[in-house]
Image 1 (cartoon, rainbow, N blue to C red):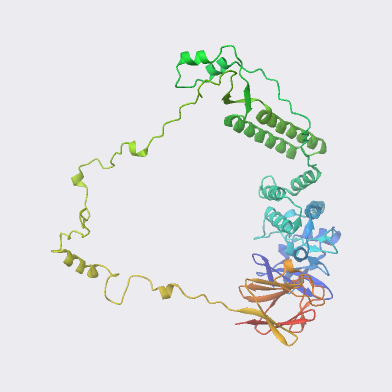
Image 2: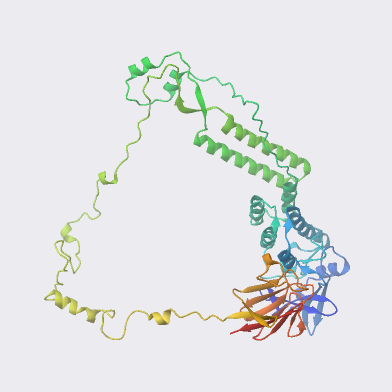
Amino acid sequence: MGRIFEDYTYDYVDQNGRFLLISKDSGLEMSDVDALQKNMIYSNSINRLLNMEVEERDLAVRLRYTVGPRRSLKNVLRGRRMNRNEFYQVLLDIINTIQSGRDYMLNSKNFLLLSDYIFVGSDLRELNFVYLPLKDLPGKKHLTEEFEQIILELSQCTDGLRQQEQTMLITFCRDREQFSPENLRRIIIATLGQEEREPDIRPSQPVREPVVQRPAVNEMAAAVPVETHLSKQAAQQALPSQASAPVKQGKAPERMRTISLSVAAVALAAIGKFYLGHPGEGYLYICIGTSILVADSVFILLKVWPWGNDEIQVPGSEGIPEVKASPAKPVSYQSLPIQDRVQDDPASIPRSPVQTPAAGLHAAPHPEYESEKAYYDSLPDRTSILSPSNETGLLNIDEVVKPAITRRVWLEVERGGVKERLPIEGSSFVVGRKGSAVDYVENGAGVSRVHMELIKTAAGWIVRDLDSKNGTFINGEKLIANKDYPLEDGCKLKVATVEYSFHID
């Protein structure tokens, strides 16, 4: 039996069909089952929900779901890739299932939104979900965490999905105050409905700069005082009073850029919050138009508006020396006065028992000993590290650093009279015919893309059939798909027509 969360366990049985059984270690009682939700499931054929029965045997209750030939979403994603539209369609199917469950008094928190327990029919458009009609589910992941995990798993198998799209969805799932399946659905629909606009660049048409009245040079000089090595009289003689200087278009000041971007961010956040509170197609167009207007305003302010820079060109001023502001003179740390922390008499500062004179390398004798030799001879009696005895105050390195005990695990297969050894490293080993999804490629007849998986657990090694078409056998017994079977040294594993033997030291 496997574990779902906390003390809830699962198991698969094959009794004229494959069934998923969910129970509890401490014992699931009938009082734990929500009677209203159970009756709703019994009385109605709810779309995309697996057929469920509540079994009670010897006062033990368990939930029984009809799986049949369906495969788990996790195993399907191992053997295939999706495109961007399929990615969003799977998410929308999950959201629509949760929303339709409200019509039958079902709680969104009771859906088991894990890829191991979402089952796929003939294709990804046929998803089937497990619903737990229980009053309390301690240890179950929050709905936002389950959505985040599903998005991560789906995005790893999706081609054409942009990184910013994945980041946006994950960030929204982590905001528990704003998150809801309905809001996530609106974001997905808005993302799919947005048209990517390419900038209209026409290099054949010259771009005209806006006509702006520029101030005279003497006005700019008066507004920005600059210290030079010229005298004021020389500067006034060199610069004509009536000449107007063309100013090059420069970048906006850093402070103006920061203020503009901050105001734009606040405005966009307010627009998004307004739309979340007033959903609707009309408000969507209004919010999109307002957002574009804010973005255009910031672009015009920062890129088009003719901000002046520090360069000033005056006709006939070639002979004027370059005017530069005097840079700030760096201050050397060595030039700063250093103030001692201790203001008392230096004679009152305690000295070390052993002082090293500046003229030599030999330490002065300790006042308690007659000579330097007597001082060092006394050290073994004062410390255990230098003691000539066998005892030591340090840890024995042989006791601290012990060689890691690793048990070798491998599969052995015989082909044409020659035995091939397949070492297993790590905690998982997948066998199948799809090279990018497995650890060992088996091209034998009847082998599925992902066929079986060997997993290392705390109790030992197990083997699991990954919804293969022709099944997996252990010692002649056919495995139930997704059910865990313990492995021991010498077990025979058969994949289609190929037989392996499992070995462990």
